[in-house]
Each structure stands twice: as structure tokens, then as C-alpha cells.
Length: 61
Image 1 (cartoon, one colour):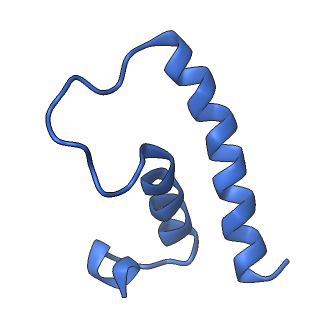
Image 2 (cartoon, helix red, strand yellow):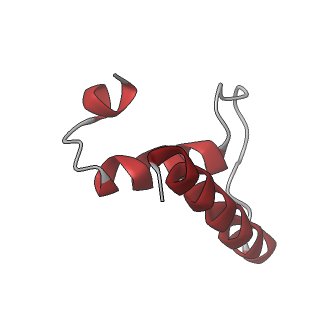
């Protein structure tokens, strides 16, 4: 599996699980609308850990 396919697969799995969690409890309480969705942030963090990127700066780069 290439890198892009892996990221897409992680995103799709995250979407499935996020839907289950979202039904059980409310995650957002107010404030401004974020630039990225929760699903996107979860995907970025999981892939960053998998690719052994040490900090958020490395993931962003």
C-alpha cells in the first residue's frame, strides 16, 4: 500500500469510528469554527505517529 492509500484508509476508518463516538457524546461546545475538522486532525495525528514524526512541526512540514 502506498502512502496516499494508507492516509485515505486511515481517514475512512477514522470517519467510521468518529460517527460512533459522536452518537454517544457531544465533542464540541462552542467557540469559533476550526480550520480543520476533527476527522482530519485525527487522521493527521495517527499518520504522524505511524510515520514516526516527532512533533507537530514535522507533521505539518
